[in-house]
Length: 165
Image 1 (cartoon, rainbow, N blue to C red):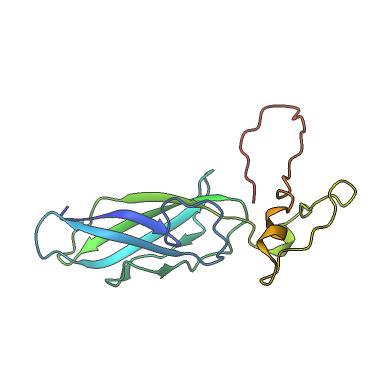
Image 2: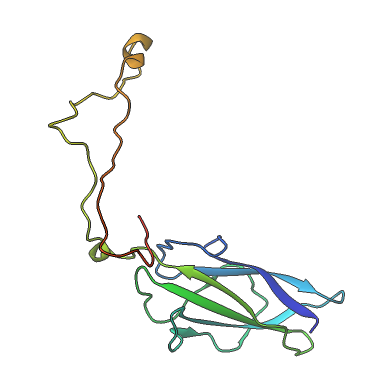
């Protein structure tokens, strides 16, 4: 086991939430226990974190690439956590230890957005024109503070998981 992967990233982030790229890119760093070892091949397997069959198995890919490897599997579901496993093979044909990370997709398509946009209530907050470049500082100093959007609500039971996009 002379070659191992660390620093696994999806879309340039470690364990990211809200990935909005339908074909995310995977990257990793290499660590060798002996000098001169290099990556000969990799294999990436992506599956839903909740379990089930892989949505993508790259199979063994003979390539030294370890940056910006593009997902090429079934379409990813929105708001879903996926795990990805990485298996490397070095230039001697020895398999390194497996590495694992995860990512969670955001709302990948306009159809996935079911909420309404939050906006100010014109009945309670009067319209204020934004400051202009030529406005004197006195006018901009007297602007009302920015709107704060909040709403109280009660849940019928404790949440299992929540995301705000």
